[in-house]
Image 1 (spheres, rainbow, N blue to C red):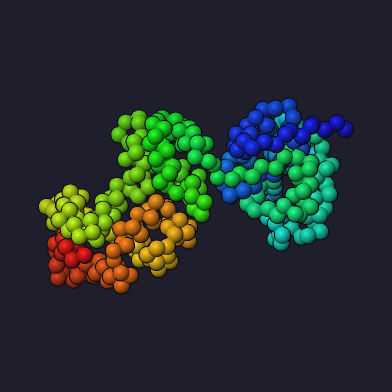
Image 2: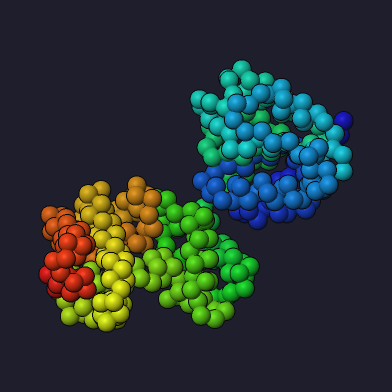
Length: 357
């Protein structure tokens, strides 16, 4: 049986290379997609399926496996000929069988599958997707020897900017390259220790596109999307107050919450109070995890938060002691309690709280 030749590997990011691969006549029999960027790993699976499988015969031509894997069932699926599609597609999704101690399959089963890879027929594409891999394991080595292995690492700055531009285009929007790069530099995705992924970036971009007045998304739109417009105002109040600019902090409050309307609808004030509490909670937790001089990207990763937001929070609260931050948070909690007990008007309480920071 004649097999397709193995495509050459290169340094181009896999999300570009896989497009060329699927358009070529040299399709592999085995394909392993793994890495930090889960968004792209999942995208790759969908893309491969869209290029190989005829929708009318999907049930017959595409077999999916995940968890509690049986190597012989996978092998049987690989030996089945496609009906209408280019190849029979067998997907082993999100598996840990490439790690040192897999739970999805027993060790002897992994070895059976590893030995089989060289025998996958050229009428089949066996696709594995995984988060982590151990490159010393026989299964990984055989996948690399027999097919193509892609490590979906984070995008570099230039590639990320292009990806964001395409996301905006799909939403009917656009942005200048400078504004996109400014967002890319500030959101934390490019930082080595950041836990920010393309899922987070895509969400930010969608929010910025929705927030923008026209077709063009600006740097301001990107900044707001990382926190939200009201959250930005709440943060600005604390930043100004902690810097000794109480007058500016109160002006931001007056511009954010209309006093006359608030007196008629105290829920507006309480919602804004909730945003202030949220910002203070972030500052307190960030201080607990990293101290005044902690690494904001490491702290953000532990908290599962936007690194840009954590960095700003840590900088804004730098002049305050940890005990003072906790006291401010406790005082903010007391406002709602005092308001509900009828002791004070909610808006006045908020003004007094900000003046006392």
